[in-house]
Image 1 (tube, rainbow, N blue to C red):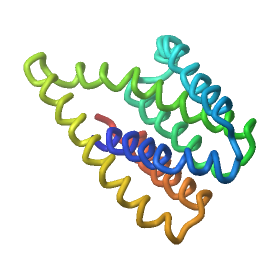
Image 2 (spheres, helix red, strand yellow):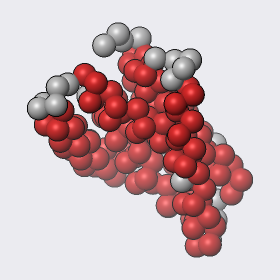
Image 3 (cartoon, rainbow, N blue to C red):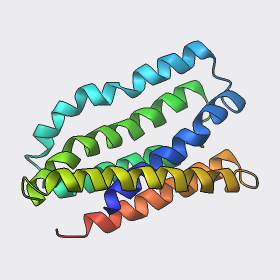
Length: 171
């Protein structure tokens, strides 16, 4: 539940302000934005490498570490205000996001029986949607008195702190 809130909230917060940040601060063109969206999917293609990481790290720990990496990517976005910098932050964030999503469903299916797993997955999706709405509202309010960098830092630190808490849990 906490990991779902962290990933949904962090991604929604990032997505809410990223396009404006990219245009206003980094001066990204439409073509560059298309390139960024393509680059963002590279970690998704490499998510099959999770299998090898599972040889080294327990699955629930890998999920928390993935969220941690995602949070770092969100946090550094505001500092890297060039096209190359945005590529780096998107890659870091996307590796965390895609690796988390790879193990998330697997963990849910392991922890719940066949009859309850679909209900749990549906509830988690609902909670993610509610989180998106809440975070969107929060970002809308704080955007009027905080800079992009500060918002990215706040979102990233919140995700990182939650990921550390999740890592220390033993489900």
